[in-house]
Amino acid sequence: MSTPLKIIADAHIWGVESAFSTLPGFDVDLTVLESSRIKPATVRQADILLTRSSTRVHAGLLGDSSVRFTGTATIGDDHYDKAWLDQAGIAWANAAGSSTGSVVEYMVAALLHLHEQRRISISNSCIGIIGAGRIGSEIETICRAIGMQVVVNDPPRARKEGGEHFCSLDELLRQTDLITLHTPLIREGTDCTRHLLNGARLRQFGGRGVINAARGACVDNDALLQWLDDKPDRFAAVDCWEHEPRPERQLFSHAGMAIATPHIAGHSVDGKAANTWFIYRALCAFLHIEPAWNMRDHLPTPPSPQMTNTQGDCWHQLHSATSHLYALKEDHQTMQSWFGLSDRELPNAFTGYRRHYPVRRAWQHIPVHFTHADAYTLQLAQAIGIKIV
Image 1 (cartoon, rainbow, N blue to C red):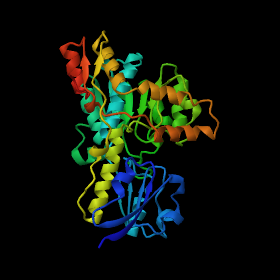
Image 2 (cartoon, rainbow, N blue to C red):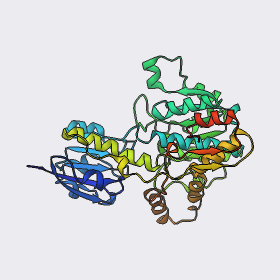
Image 3 (tube, one colour):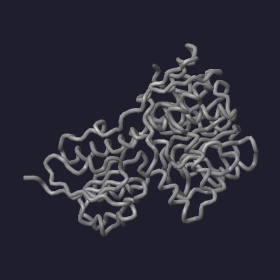
Image 4 (cartoon, rainbow, N blue to C red):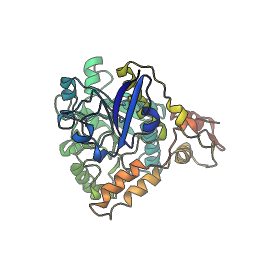
């Protein structure tokens, strides 16, 4: 006889109904809700809660509920009060690592876009990577492979592994031309990352560019705006913003904002499917059942192979190829167009774009044929993750 199981889930978890409507050995009652409707009253009788980042999960939400497991289909989990969940005996899971490939592809596209804009010279730039976890480590490998100098700051890893491979944040700020952040959002303690790049540290920075595809509050956005205002040759590329879904208009529309995107770096359809797959497996482990759903059965058919006829140097050809694979410029132009929206319209535009994001496949599923590339360009293409035919 099947065991009753009541699940409340965010409507914008990819494939939520196909993944969670049936589970072996359970009589599932799945209720799919907009995040605004996930409240104490709606979760009180639930056994399982599945969310995205717009739902804060803490005692106020679950303190009077029967929830035994909660999972977020996102990499970040700072919207979860993990200490309280542990104390309350509620199991929890995130999707850390699920969107790594998507974010790395976003970063590669961003670097090539910045080079195409002549804001950086890839082969003559020193990049500082703050946070060398899954994403930061992959970016480090790619940046070294394409000839960039790389400096890495990661205090937790430095304490564990020794400091030979790492430098202090002060050293990184002095030595680099470009900074990219890939840390979790930690609000207090020794490794606090909230406003890790604040006004004082930005004033220390001797370079010209800041990239943030980590968490919005890792960079003080008011300080970043002031830093951009101070010198016209400075630039930023930002995907994660403070005060989402109400990012500061003066910042995302600034002349120095080379790339402004609405928190979609990890939003390839493969990345979103992997988000679901990670928490699905975690739930199955919690329930002691074997997974029966496979995300690959529900992914769309990959597009046809792409061809690039672009001539020019290797960086121009690689930029052309990655633009076929991911239309970064379109995401940027869309966000820039929101400057004139009202205070009510802006969060709706930001949230709506993320929820109804155009299909973007992982690069491994879209082979590219270069018609004019030499061996060095093809070598670089493979290093940055392009599948060549």
